[in-house]
Length: 143
Image 1: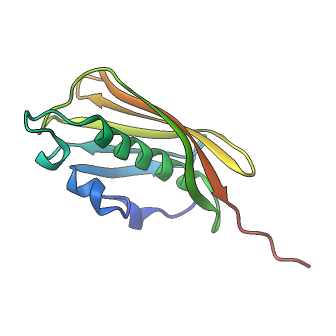
Image 2: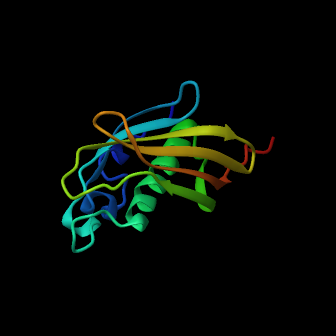
């Protein structure tokens, strides 16, 4: 299993911490996954205290990226988000206690498919995303 401990917290992206997100646990069984929390900050919200849709996208994209990297081995890693679809089911407000989950759906040689969700403390879905990511694979040494 790839050691992703140094990426816990903001995932290496200051914007995730600034908007109130934190990655807290990850694994690779049956495929890569990550869980976290999100308490939206004022920076994540419009003047009325509601989280802007693009801010959800930042966290959902980050969660899927983290999950994929947790599921890869060695120096293999994500390179770019190729396509992402997001849906928003209910409003999130500044200070809400939300949970975050990202998981790998499928890994191929060149791309990975992943899903991510944001939910309330009661488990109600707030937002979700599916995406396709380009992978960078380290070539095995030539004999």
